[in-house]
Image 1 (cartoon, rainbow, N blue to C red):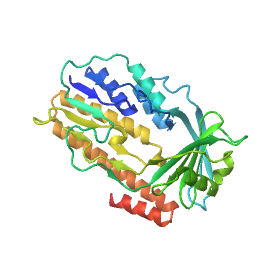
Image 2: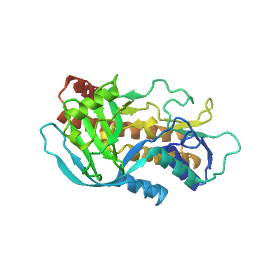
Image 3: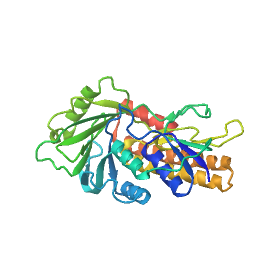
Image 4: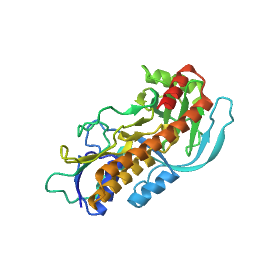
Length: 326
């Protein structure tokens, strides 16, 4: 069995640790989730397939007390009609979920000496050099803030709408509050003001009491690390496997980012397992890189189709061109 360092405590890293521990590998864990004093909440909307995957990996009970949504309403394109459909989901705090995963792991047998592999979600962990940095398809930002739902608004339905500039989603948080997110095609100097403008232009403005008073702008264009898997060598006797958003970041519109992060953890654990049984590490790492590049290309094709159907503004054409080039 292998000795492995898990250099982080995100959902993908902890999932990889669980899979490896179940198979007898010795694990050195990083600091607990949320140990950073600046760590706050990170709302995630997990739909049925993601919840099924999470349950298959961790068992029952991790998110059973999370607020439940039952439907989604979508209007994609300014002249489209809203469509409402059933979509069971849970709204979870990603930071709190990671803490629960860490607690469920319990104590693990740690390696006595150097480890052969490092698993991390950081795209620049300072381990063996990789050359180029992560490849990103575009400059778009996700504006995010919270506000209150208007009285009488359905607290079990997530709402998605588009304006000329952005797509906008309202996600009820299980109380009187909701998460407001808007994707815009570039940097935002004043996120709260821009989010207010987008909300005012949207049909969803009437679903909230007011626009969020504060907002943040998060880089959200799809991104792929050029070297997500590096095999151990004589010069660098430990290998590196990047998981989660450090390896591949999906556009949040897809709704599959958390599931993809968990799948990278499964892939990393499979590499370490196969390496321990004698499969050449170089071939395993090349396979991981090919898998992620294929997934990234397919995701960019999906994004180009969706955004091309909804947006005609010049700034969005730049985003579409970036996706096609990548």
